[in-house]
Length: 109
Image 1 (cartoon, rainbow, N blue to C red):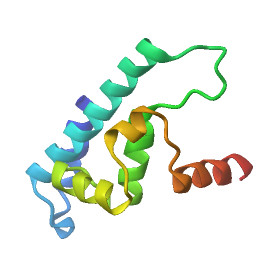
Image 2 (image 1 turned 90 degrees about the horizontal axis):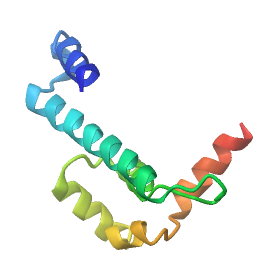
Image 3 (image 1 turned 180 degrees about the vertical axis):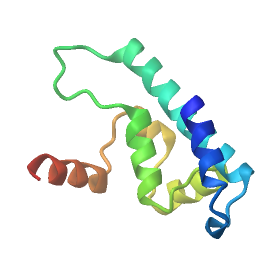
Image 4 (image 1 turned 60 degrees about the horizontal axis):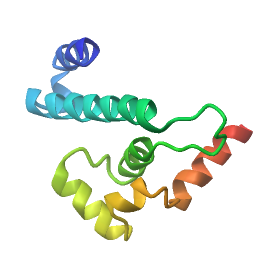
């Protein structure tokens, strides 16, 4: 969490960004939640011999970041509606093609 606090303090030095402490706090909180959920998910479900294991939390985060950086619940809900997905789809490892295509393009770069 310390890194997010330092980032928020540093970013406040640039008023041209037109962001408030609430914005930075919201973003930091969102990333903390994603990271904590990912760590717990790894502890609960990861298996070293499963080459196809995917993190539902990271897939969800990647989708949100592909759609206007949806950091707050109303934006996330709107994004899920727009892409015809639910949290359960992510938990059940339903593939969202744009994330998969992005990963594949990164792997070949």
